[in-house]
Length: 243
Image 1 (cartoon, one colour):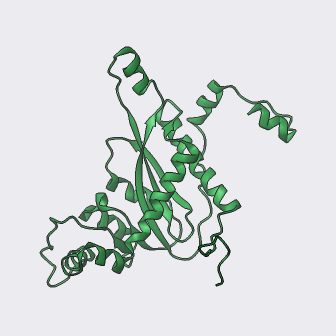
Image 2: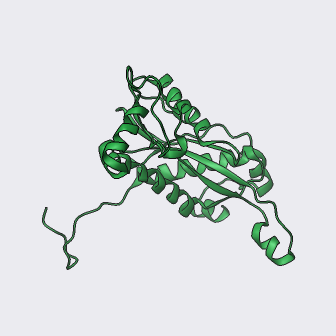
Image 3: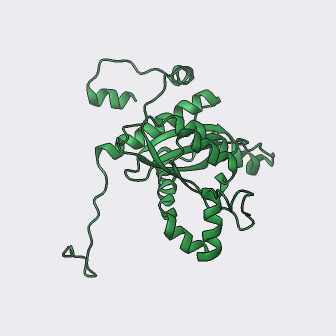
């Protein structure tokens, strides 16, 4: 930090690590970034982050069984821009469906579609999304053991339609029909976080870790706002192909 301040030629002092850690627990909310005004296709996913500590090194060097502690980072990613519009950090015992509501609450604009993996399947998730808007499309693959609801004949739900489609077209056919393949963009955002920000938390307390994760999300969004890769088709010889 001192070297950055010197490069910017700023007349400010850099706090020490203890001051940074203390301030992190009381830092105001960090804005994740700007989202498009049009209805958003929200991709939801989660990943585990290690908590800073001795971990495996202590276990290997001293033959001491270290307690492994994790945090779960939940992200809501805009499918069109890749911007992370919502994030939460919880302890490892929190279920993924419990964070659908907090993630959607962070999106100020309209939502047209919510896509998540099978871990979010269940009536609770559909009910939470329906509270945000009854016309929101929910794309979540039901398990192979899923059965139709009692009201499937008179008023089939979205989930009932997916169960019927899976039985008729198979999982690949259902994915193509619903556009489920876009969910991989959420996994890409998770990979970017771990590759750039890191796979472990540096703060020691949960409040500080929440601030750390929020800053990491803001950094990734700022990078996307600054510039993003431009892809062009090329021929087998490596030259730019004609479009």
